Length: 82
Image (cartoon, rainbow, N blue to C red; front, side):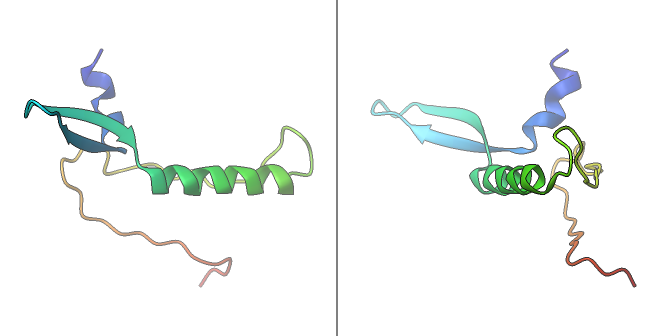
């Protein structure tokens, strides 16, 4: 079961901390910048919703989730299509 959800960790940031005795501990935490962006977007979606349970959004799949070190930039900006 752990292997199925290993890709989830890749959306998190790995933090290293050194204890007083010199031991190094590792912790996965959510990327704070990413969390802030998601929270702001959710807030905007709730404010702009016409009906309480109806929201307009685009769902993008993370195609790089299974790669060790993906190098991809796909930037979506604005509202116009060309």
